[in-house]
Amino acid sequence: EAKRSGGARFVRFESAMRERAARRTDIETDLRQALQSDQLFVVYQPVVGLGAAGGTDRSAGVEALVRWRHPVRGIVPPFEFIGVAEESGLIGPLGDFVLEQACRDFMRWQHELGALAPRLLAVNLSRAQLGHREWVDTVARILADTGMDAQRLQLEVTESLAAQDTDVQQRLHELKALGITLALDDFGTGYSSLASLHLLPVDTVKIDRSFVSQSETSHHHRVLIEATVKVAQSLGMNTVAEGIETAEQANVVRTLQCDKAQGYLYARPLPREDLAAWLMQPDGA
Ligand code: C2E
Ligand code: MG
Ligand code: MG
Ligand code: MG
Image: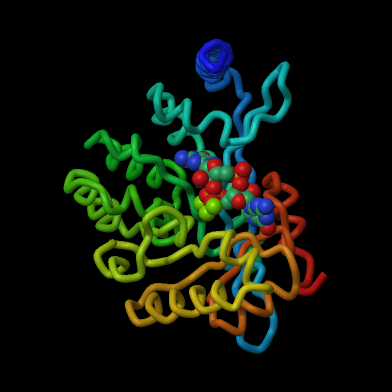
């Protein structure tokens, strides 16, 4: 009896696996198509500066986030296709597309908005993009083509990536040599540790949303944010609190001396023109 139900469970498991594999193959095929037919686009979420006085600086920066408008499925979120892109090698062309588009949009804000334009552009990076030695040349080429100042570009990496083999380390140092800065994304998840922060060539630490979302109710999480900020400060790094959704969370991270914040409280990720409109609104609106 137990054996039979175990068998049935296995068949269910197997068919779920097959369904998943089929869906992955579909996504890969469609993504290949998407890259050639303008289905991918980039949206931007503001990263605001948190002044001690209580104001928020809207022009501190933006993070570029990729979106896919699928002809049948509609908008597909990144978590459904970034992994597939990484495993299939499509992350190369996808990443180059996002970087180039984001640099172009960033330069356009500079021309259209002057002092109101964002000062920093953050772009997410996958491990697979650092696999190729020539990729650093591609980045330099994109900067030259778009007129983007390397100092204004920040590439976001996760800790597992930043702590990788010497090859990856080498690549990160080459990027830094171009003048690009690095941010450690999603800090506090996975195996991130304060003790090894000084080993990583990063300029900014982004404190994961999971800490921020519990900061109002959990003393423990507030203490962890505070410790992260202190260690980062002592290493000359600045900090960004991710996923701020309430005014109370904003107050907490401001009090704990985070330099910047990002989250739905300020704005959702927006298309280029909507971001320009958001930047032109006065602070507090
Ligand atoms: P991430 O880099 O940590 O980006 C932040 C994610 O949190 C975004 O999700 C953003 O929309 C979401 N977020 C921001 N504020 C809030 C908030 O207040 N509440 C909640 N619940 N969520 C908030 P998104 O755009 O779905 O991206 C998910 C992840 O996909 C990103 O996490 C990043 O790891 C990856 N990703 C996105 N675009 C790219 C890309 O161009 N290249 C690569 N390699 N990865 C990307
Ligand atoms: Mg990020
Ligand atoms: Mg993040
Ligand atoms: Mg995150």
